[in-house]
Image (cartoon, rainbow, N blue to C red):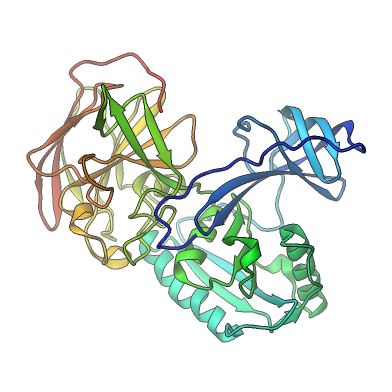
Length: 424
């Protein structure tokens, strides 16, 4: 996944015919979700760890919305290391597995420790331990410090280059296991770090730029030791999914939001968990930041009677109202105001001369950017002063009275409280 990749999409692992050695099995273990961020593509993989073995879960439909680390029971067909589940159930009363690598930030100030494990099976590239530490402990630390309002910081160490056996193809679990074993043999205490980052020189056949567990501190970087990829993959470790965009239509015309929308997996061009196509790595939107606990004292849930609200720019470090939350049974609309400052200094006017609207739904993790000018592209998505938008599914109405350098003035009403509809 790179800034130039304009449209990426989720591909669930396809279900292949079972081999002659496949057999029925019931296993209980730990569930993990992994985001694989490809160059021009993306997918989400799901794994079960049971009895010291990790199995790739493959099914044709969606997976239940379990937390990474949940204790689950899987009933299905085992074919080598691939498990085709007919049923996946969370074990009642079982706590989420305590990972050796903690994922949830400890607020109000949480310093995350990263160990960059540099491995190769042919020859090292130009990344040195010093360069890796500079990227993670300086550049990424500054990014997370700004984006989290000082609540999350980063420290880093890096191994020397370690040689590991060549994997069969680009087997991620083998690369990780071999890298951890090599680092441990070199004297590193792996349990002392929140994130274990395995970096290796770019391998084209792998196809991905980075991949990471969602909600668990292990990540892979394939030759892209840069801000775009490392901030994104660390965001997955913290528990975030992708920042999408939605293209919607009603009665044959493009509209901002409707019951018939197509989701672009990395479509939010202003967000580090989306595309950030404009040359920078934008902060997490208010919906995602709230998921991480960063929006304390900065967001407000609007009651049906509505009101007039003054929104400070979401990048302002001092606490104050910076985002509105408009809830309904199936989705929530988030309203925020962005300005070209800090990690958002590169943002175009199409993101800053009005308010941005995102939707979070109960059906799909992550966030959806709504394009309030759907006749053009998503780099011009704001609701500008003097204009209004009504959510056709819930009746929430947002009108922008003003958008000035320090604040935007937004009027929210809900004149006709509609019954809940299914979200796209």
